[in-house]
Length: 194
Image 1: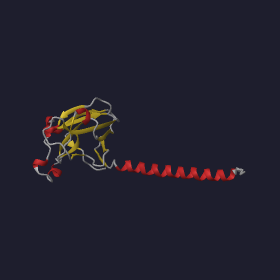
Image 2: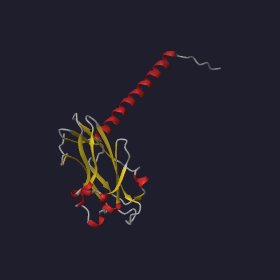
Image 3: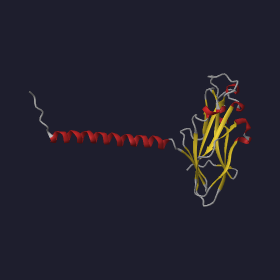
Image 4: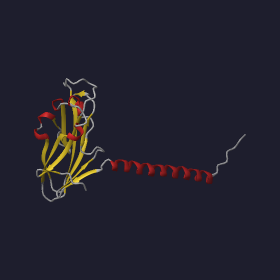
C-alpha cells in the first residue's frame, strides 16, 4: 500500500510560482488593454474654451460602405461615432455639431456609387438625454446639434448613421457615404491639433 507524504515546503513553492505567473499575466494583459484603448483617442482639437476628443480610430470621419437597410431601432444599436466636448471656461459656451460631406473621400467614387442623403438616417445623443433622429437630407447645412455646454462640464456625444428601411437601394451593394463630424464654436470650425 502506497502512503502519500505531504511536503508543505514543496506546496508553498508550487503555489508561489502559480500565483506569480497569474499576477504577471494579469499585469501584462492590463497594460496592453489600456494602451489599446488609449490609441483610439488620438485625434484631439481645441480652442481657448473647448477641448474636443474623438473616441474612434477614424476620428471625425463617418463611413458607410455597404447598403444594409434597417429600422430605426436597429440603427440606434449600430456602431456609434463618439466624441467628448469639454468646457474649459467658468461660463456656458454655445457650440454646434455638423455632419458634412467628406468631399476629399467622395472624389474617389463615382457619383452613382454614393448613397444619396435622402436614404440615410442619423441620430445624435448628448450624455443621457433623449436620442434625436433625422433624415440626413433634412439637416440645413449639415447642422445636427445646436446647444451649449455648462461651465467646466463635459458633454459626451454619440452619433449613429444608417440606411433607412424603406430605401430603394439594392441591399448588400457596395455603395458609400463619407462624412465628417465638425464641431463649430462662434462660426469657426475647431481644427487646431493639440
